[in-house]
Length: 395
Image 1 (spheres, rainbow, N blue to C red):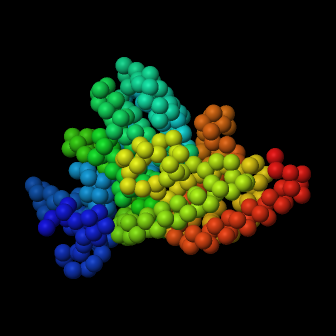
Image 2: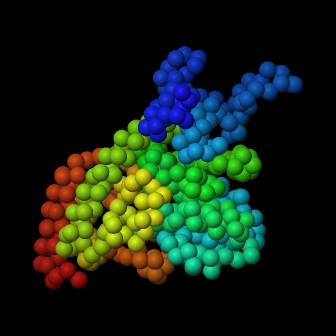
Image 3: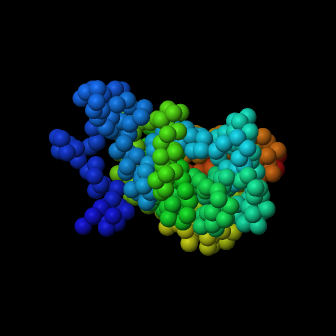
């Protein structure tokens, strides 16, 4: 029975790196060497310099490639390093179609950096396939999607976008950070490169900054490897080991976090002080059927809008269980304020146009008791509402 015959949960643990063949150690060795002794002038070994290849980084690269159903994986020093290096596949004069409510770091890379090198872009609502087709130009070489998107949880039809891209000889990149390969595998739906901030669910413990990319096409993999080696933003070995350790528990963490998120999303949806909850697990989500078709669950991230910005500030001050911080995808629940955190790089008028309001919070649900979280939120909203009323009402 080959590894590929096992379920995803079993593959997380039982792969070629199950134990170290040299010692039997049930953990991938951390190889700190920067350079490697060579047998002779005429014969070089597999490893020569750790920017080009390192056995510890190689392990996490091969593990993520297997989980995503790709042929080759690449590990970078951050999610943005992975995204930025993938963008280097483009050339001057190329055009990119990008989902409009993309992560703020990606927005900054596209709008402030790529433009300096003569690479054009168009932001578009990728849930609207007619708008996507209208955005195509003769020089369009890439379609870039996040699904669900950050922070409004809009869902892009990966298969449909990939088909459009292929019609125009363009590539499709999909940021799969929110879903992970446990819940969604874009390469199986036609994407060319799948990207991750492994800082998030894959690492899962708020203790590493890392990025991953996976390709299916061998030739594209060779091109991306050349860029990884040239640009040099590779993942350090200690972080590679931390990501591998996190991946081992990915299925149980995602399953529990998702169950908690469903309960909390339903609580928030029914609360009178909450204007809107964005979560692809709701049947009234505009792209519910698309997400159900291409994913194995709604995930553990949601966003919600409160009645006013003042109520939001009071709520953040009063809530006790989630940490209030940048990032997501950890064992602890993380509450974030996109306006001043993940999307601070996006101008206020652009955020407003995209529906990222000043009363919007994003919640990455962790492993705490969902009932405890709901009690905390309920009490915090009650106290915050009373304070707002005392200050002259919720505006």
